[in-house]
Length: 430
Image 1 (tube, rainbow, N blue to C red):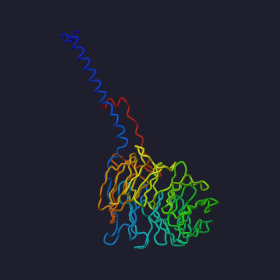
Image 2: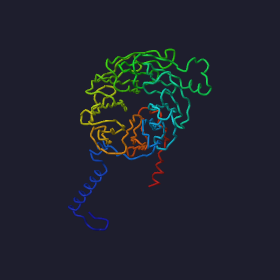
Image 3: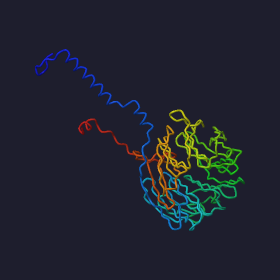
Image 4: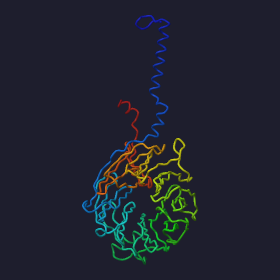
């Protein structure tokens, strides 16, 4: 064989050259393709946490401390023991407003909010403020001392009272009363309806699209119509035959469900819009006092003895890890947040523990000695920690630029659609 430069190539040389070409081509293909285990590793890997922002709430550190910290998709509310409320932007940490709610040092309950209003009960009075400006919209003195925190929806609010009843009011009615000092035409009372049980209500109610539910201290779950001609009328009553130990959890997926924990170590899943049909029940080995968290189709429960376990929302059966073991974590005090790939908890040593959501394995344990007040965030995937003096830190997983809205995906900001560049432009850029 004669080459371009006129030299000769023998048969042996030709064979060696072809072998070299084949080997180099195979190596090139191997370099371009990921290793068989690489995709699996990427699927179960957990990105590290990075600090998104840090902020300081307004309070007198010499005499006050943080009483409550709650958040929704937009705002983090820090309430001091003196009654000062600081609203921080949930994504930037910027202070939006500060206000004194109620009298100084008056005992207040944790704030609750909807898309535009935040509501706080201080003493016997309910205060409603604009969530983004802090402007007071109205205040209303309740007919009796509240026994649990209020619940606000887009049109109404519900407050359990110490006489074993629950009252409902229209937001528009009280805003009209605040503005004109009288009730709207055709409205006889500020309270839309009143439902009495004669039993103590220690936990805030939950509301779905058309019904509201609450549980009494004896373990009786009542579900009522919110509006219409049957407003305030009972739709069904579910008897757990054992006292309730944790707040009810409302889950809205293809249907609306109520999750309830009882002192007889039972967890119940009940159809909200049925006549009280029990979807499933699960026998627990321990009592539950911590709020129940539902992310996607996964239910997470923290027992009083420190075990966290996961159940399937549809089946009520324990979640399985990738190696077909039951998903469970030991030594857990508080469930802080859940992301696509990780579960974040606080253990008995006040460390922030990262557990892989797929495998159940512990990834990291970090200690933040001055951030001892965790925030139970079940609405987004952000991790919030605070000090008793009001220093709040927000963390996110590296590479996750925008928060994931777990409970209210309809509130997610609309992202602009960016068109892919034309092939000619891509070639020109090269």
